[in-house]
Image 1 (cartoon, rainbow, N blue to C red):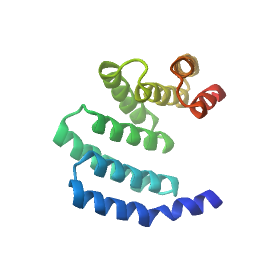
Image 2: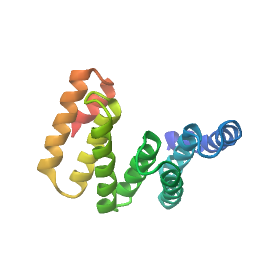
Image 3: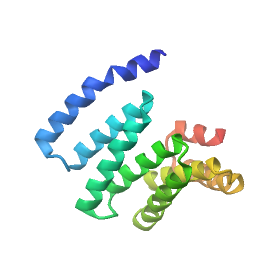
Image 4: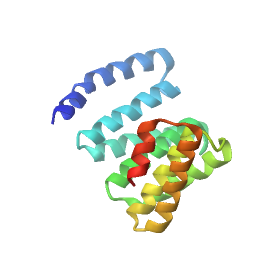
Length: 163
């Protein structure tokens, strides 16, 4: 409850940030897109997952029209939408989006890139949600090994160990 109150106080700050970034950079700049994604996450965290989904779908469509199906900003929005869908029990669609993100990031990024490792972790969560436990466990173990090998955030290592 206390953390929830803190989240609720974020709304005016996020809206002000969006207004400033839109004025400074324009609607489609990556920093503006990132802020819109944070606003969607705010809706998600405050229980309005449908609004989060609506914002992210609209944002993804506009970014794909502008940039195509690939690019860091598109993949970021796509991953955020997948996480929201997974939490809404729309697991098959989430799995498809996470697979696209993982395939593109595998092609674009180095093995030790934190974005790629996070995408593997997200994909493993989708597998787990679909009851594909052995595949999920194998991928979570790979994520843990990579996080330990490349010295990524200890909190992420601990979270991965819990799975």
